[in-house]
Length: 268
Image 1 (cartoon, helix red, strand yellow):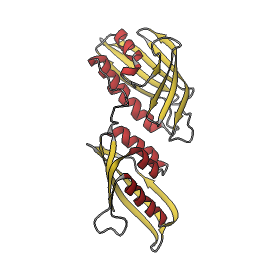
Image 2: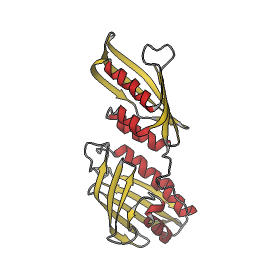
Image 3: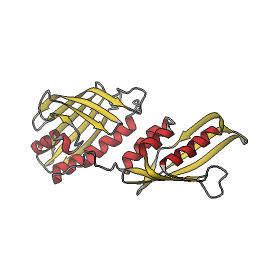
Image 4: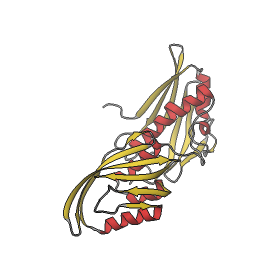
């Protein structure tokens, strides 16, 4: 059976020892909010990402200049049915020399496509391992999460996608929208037009829900990102008061600034 664990590889000019030391400096490339020791065998530390994800790791193997293995001993996601999907999985860093360079092979053993968190976790690890960690190794400064950090459009879009697939639209508003978000329907729309401010946008959504007599199904595509915008396609099949059963196909366009969604526009 084909190995489905998530794996990615980077090459750098620095020595295996420098790569090993950078990996152990977890606060400098993964999160400034790491709690606990991260450098030695049997050290344990915790990570958390706003209110979306937290986990606990234990270093179960540490071979200087060659290999580091973390075991996930505790985990929580707020967007999956199985909150503990990472527990028992291993985070493996394998260091070797290739053609005069140092290769780092990263594997999250046990992170497989069957996991509900898979897409977001792959996006996250890809950013940290192929961008933040190499920056720390080669430039001396990574791109870790911090309380002050404005989350990137890729992080916002990934989180949006996870909640959208679960039809958690009000959770999207609560977590990802800015306080002064704007919501716009097409000109001349028979629906709910324009709203500004988080409370008004929520009411707009609630008013629409009240018109639905029966929900037959819906599908939302994965986000397509361009600049500081991302768009999704959505198909909805509902029975609406006074209109009967309708099938709506639309494009939903979102603008992100400062780590929050600033506007949403609907095209149908």
